[in-house]
Length: 409
Ligand SMILES: [Zn+2]
Image (cartoon, rainbow, N blue to C red; front, side, top):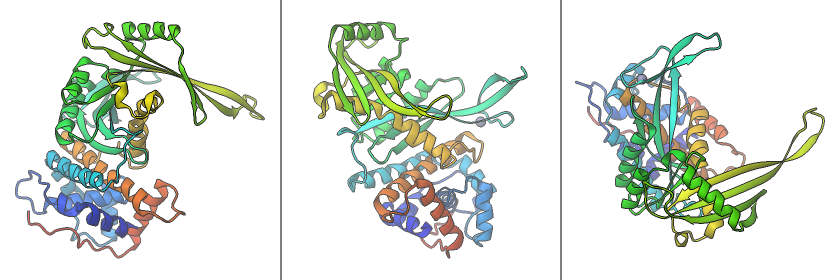
């Protein structure tokens, strides 16, 4: 399965020719960057989880002559060209989109943006660590160091395609970093999406105006703290009948209000969509012996400047699109952390952390497309199982790395 994935990456996405163009700024490098990147890609595809287990596998496979040592990989990552890696990611997106491997989300192309915190530690620190004081159970205060980044994904029915990430630097908040990220994504992926969704933090005129300047619409979660807007929406909901429907097992009551003059900074009319959702579920009763039926209730509000006419599927569809925001939590953060060990710090430096993340997301994007397009064997049901087969393939098969171009340093 390892060979199948490598062949697919090369045949469909030209992966190893593309990564051969990435450079780093080591002085007098003995080993070309492409070999270092190949080692990292193999580490991710075979889900080694750390440079140390990669090194073990390299020794076992007698690939030492071909793949670099972990200290060389780590050093090169410190100065690897991030824009060069982003260029490879963009190339893969273009090929995937042209070949219709990606699909619209509820009939619209939807981007999702959100921040994530990575691997905290009590002892390891670089110049770009964020820090905070935490109080343990025994009352002892400790300094905790951590890194954060913002990610931008393209939501989809089967694949959440990760487009780019940007670090949140010490002294700045998520929005500052997100603004840089959105600007870059707008420049690199101008036609990839028409709507961008974020949580309550993204209900800012700066974000809405930036997107509007590029003819994109914005959707942000509305929280109670935004008093004027939320109170006005609640007031209007009392005065009008909702649209009621059922989708799957969930019952919806949805209102769609046009509101003006309640968001001072933005100054334009917006829609506030209110959704009351109830899903019947069966849970174990408290005594453990029987089951009981309960209703899981959730109330959502979103603010958007998306015109009703832009959604081909009407209000019901817009609510589904608003909910696709969860894809960045599940499809991006949870999955890459739980399955792919994304929170692991492979090398603790500002540049290396982002280089490793960008390369990971390139591998995850290819893997996800490979899985839905190329795995016909019905016995392979889960991602975890497929990853296991790829790892076993690398361990047991006769692996030649002839696909990697031998470019001199
Ligand atoms: Zn750090």
